[in-house]
Image (cartoon, rainbow, N blue to C red):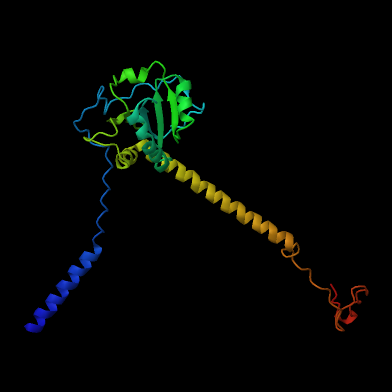
Length: 258
């Protein structure tokens, strides 16, 4: 009885083991999608446009004349003025943001001062991001901004994802917040995928060209390497028939009458 019970238990264990092996591996859980920064209650010093469409981008002049490529990138607009001490103090931080997120973020400083005032200021102050002038302050008025510096961060779908005074004690603008907007933006991720695909195709084409060039170099160094060798002529052997000799007459004794 004991032996039979042990055998039955062993068979059951083997069956359970086989059944477990037949079970498909659990599917990997999808990674949660990154979220835009949470909208918290704070003083905005203007119309709270977070989660809403940004006003049309309007400027009279881009300092330097070159408009940045904004396609597939997050846009940060800093409303400022040369006479504003907190605005000037914020410039080094904006430089750092632009350096850190240069591939995914476009920063534009927007002043409503005359262009020559901004240009004179920039002669002695380094800004590594784009500067623009809106003389009539149309964007500023659209948001009813009452205090500067004032920052809005716009995702690729033209929605304002962060807004306010960047040095606020209620919600200071940090690199982590900017990174959060970039990570949550499908437009940025789509651009990344497109660039990766283009890079892969370019690398593949480069490898094919490199192999073709290498094969061509080998062929130039050994031009006869691929040509088949012709068989060497052989001397006639003693028993070989002479191809120029006439054919022998048949033996009359072997001819059968028809």
